[in-house]
Image 1 (tube, rainbow, N blue to C red):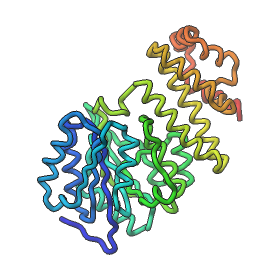
Image 2 (image 1 turned 135 degrees about the vertical axis):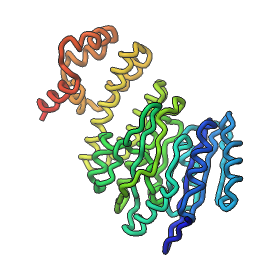
Image 3 (image 1 turned 90 degrees about the vertical axis):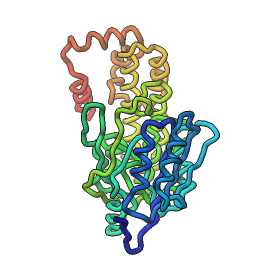
Image 4 (image 1 turned 90 degrees about the horizontal axis):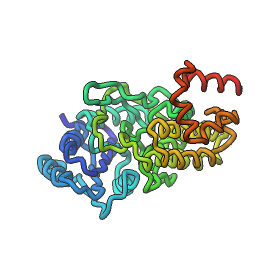
Amino acid sequence: MDVTLDNEPLVSILVPVYNVDEYIERCARSVLGQTYRNLEFVFVDDASTDESVDILQRVIADYPDCRNKVSVIHHECNKGLPSARNTAVKACHGDFVFHVDSDDWVEKDAVELMVRKQVETGADIITARAYDHYDDRIEDHLDGGRDMDRDALLCSLLTYKVAPNLWLRLIKRSLYLDHDIWAVEGRNGAEDFQVFPRLVYYSQKLSSIDSFIYHYNRYNNNSISNSGKLSNQLGVINSIRVIISFFSDKEDYLYDLIAGHDVVAIHQRLVMSILKKNRANYKVLLSMMKESNQQYWYKVGWDSSMKKWIDSNYFTMLLYQQLRPLFRIPLKAYYSFKKQSNK
């Protein structure tokens, strides 16, 4: 049943599209069939080379009541997800935006439930719940910080204890426009992490609903989140550094959190490159590690000259990673010990 609310805000549903012909119909039908009706729909085709756009147009034709509310914007060349998100936010007209990735889908009352909470609370950002869909199972998605106030959410975001997804949330569009918040284009990998902490920082009020409204596709092997390419791994680090730059002149405790997370994130990928015996990736990540803030090296044991020497020598580190299980010293226990010893 169509839903009308007093003083109902216009909500823009924003969908980036790139080579998702296997999934786009399910996604498009889920957003075009929403029970809340004061909507506009912005699909950004990021120069798809498959049948995604043709399928999308056929689906739109099945929803005549939505046709004059739909915009399909075409990039002349593939620019990546950050650019597609920026294009959509700039082109839309909504009081609020709701991001949906084109290989995912949403419940038909997703927008209605979030708008009702927004009207009730006057919040700038509303967060809901999601399911992760794998090939063989369905799990609850990592909590989006639904029951946290602004400061608690920022702390959890900057240490990646809470997923920074833009999807799963109803977001006041003026937060983007008033504070000039945009993703850095050309940096795929953790692109939402470039943006969401900044939106939260400028928000005045947060709220949430305890409803599962979003279905996150974990079995699309072509998605960026499932890619192990060096470019995407470096994209994650570069996204972190966008946030480091943003918080460099903000509260000290927030800068400490993100600068420390930068060191940990680089080292995690450094170890990953060793385990995958990818020496080229290792060299790039080692260089980034040496350029990171030395004040936070203790978080990965680099305050020890021995640990730093091991990590800085490819074959030594490869041998160390192979022999480490024999020492029966779990990595988490080692980091816990280092953290305690540096308090």
